[in-house]
Structure formats: structure tokens, C-alpha cells
Image (cartoon, one colour):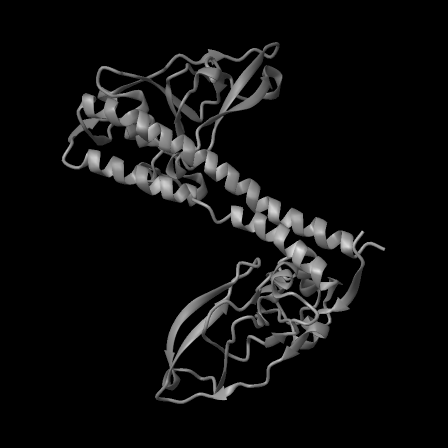
Length: 376
């Protein structure tokens, strides 16, 4: 096991006291600190004549900085850009003879460190809580030898890099462009001429069990929702859906709860909150339809048709949806684009899932690395 001291972070930092007087005719590039250990961001330019601050501090690459107001939620960072900050952002030089900056950048994003800052706040109301420099400097960090620090930083950097590879958003942008190009100048057609609503619900029996289907929002598709016993529901009827049906959730249509029933969920049941349609494949390609209804632009459009007393209770009435006119390219063009659009969507979903896992992996890895260093 690696030997490590438990030391106050102030032991490896030196507070900078080199703020300079603001000049009215100067322009300053102001920098802020994101929460949850997400680093710095550039807030924009400000003229010396437009700020009430009398003094500002110039950031130096490799310094450590934190926000008094938001340190309790992880607004701490190692400086990676030029800029200026106010006295609301204490700034420190890092003693590189004792702590590796790359190692320290992971320590300050560690839940155990941020948790100490959350307990070190003072002020009325959560959004006005501040962490004073003295309390920040007293937060404890694990400090092994420099060689061990560098080895730990290398391992954690490798995990962090996995989070910065090609994102699902990039594929979503490509898919949107293909769809928009195909819809430009296309003939408008009413939904009820392309789809036929299924209107044959089944009666619920208290002695029967029903395999259920659910629908994720943001175009993420249908999923196995488990088994429902007839005695456990107040619904007198359920809807049985078939593979290839287009379905949507009335209450979630405005946030993209649309999809095509996959073969493995054929014959599942839904509550009356869902609507199911048979697709006329002589007029619309099923893959193209799935790409369209799981597209952000489509969700935005039907969102404007959803009605309710507040945002979370808005429903899309089937009659309203069916009266909607949508642009539709030729069937040949739909069949040409459908498989590509579907592959882009599936790849994007896989990358999004990978992103979720890697985002969860880094905090877990930090907890493991730093938690065991403090175990005696």
C-alpha cells in the first residue's frame, strides 16, 4: 500500500497577494470556475470603466483557483488559460516540490475533498454560502510521494481522456443535417394518411399478468418495463402493441417519447397513456419514420402542439397529432436514407451510454485512489 500523509491543502499552496489596480482605459478578459470540477471558462471582456472592482488578479498557468461562492459544489480548478479574476476567486501558487499539479487537479475534483468544502461554508441560504480562504486551506488531502502522485495522475488522466472522445452530439448533428436536407422542399402530407391508430384495447383481468413496454424520452426508444399483475393496476384496459408499430407517450411527446416497437418487444402492453399506430410502408419507410420521430426537431414541433396546465403535465392529443402535416421526400429517397439515419442513431445511443459510464467511472476511480490513501 502507498504511504500517504493527510495534510491541509494549504500546506502545498501559497496565496497570491499580487492583485493590481484596475485602469479605466484597460480591457480585462474575465475568467470563472465551473462547478463539479469542470474547470475554467472565459466569461468575456470587461472594460475597467465598467467594473466596480478596484483590483483584479492576473491568472498564471498552473496556479490553483477557487470560487468563494461556489467552492461548496466543486468550483475549484488548476489554471489552464490566461485571464483575470476578482477577489471572489482566491488564487494560489502550487508548490511543485511537494505536489504534482496533475495529481492535485484530480484531488480537488474528488468527492471527498468537495464534501469537506461543503461543510466549511458560512452564510445564509445555500446559494449565498461562501468558503473563506482559511477554511479552504484547512481541507485535508492525501499526499503520497511525488512518484506515486504522478502514477496516480497518469491512471486518472487515462480515464478522463476517454470522456473527451467523439460525442453522441456530433453524430446527432450529422443526422439532423441529413434529415433537414432530405425534407427541404418535400411535399407535405398529413400523419393520418400515413399511420392508422390501433383502437382495440384489451380488458384487464385481475388474475393475469402482462408484459409491459415503456418509452424513454429524447428519442432513446422503447424498453422492457417488466411485468404488471392485473390486480396491481387501476387501468380497466391496456393496449397491446406489435413489432414495427409507431408508439408515443401522450405525456412525454413534447420531450421526444416516440419510437418504433423493436421485434424483441412484440406483443407487449402499455397503459392508455400511450398511442400506437400501424405504419403504411407503401408511403413511408419505417427506418426513415423512426429517424424522423426520434429527431430533436420533431420533438420541438410536436411540443408546441402538446397542451396542459404546466410543463410536466402537457399531453399530445392523438387527434391533434394525426392532423399534423409533415414534409416527406419520395419513398425511394426515404429508403435510401433510412438505414444510414438508423445507424447514426444507434451509434449515437451507444456513445451516449459509453459517455454515461465513463463520466461515472472517473469519480469512482478518484474515490478508490484517494480513499485508500487515507486508510490507516
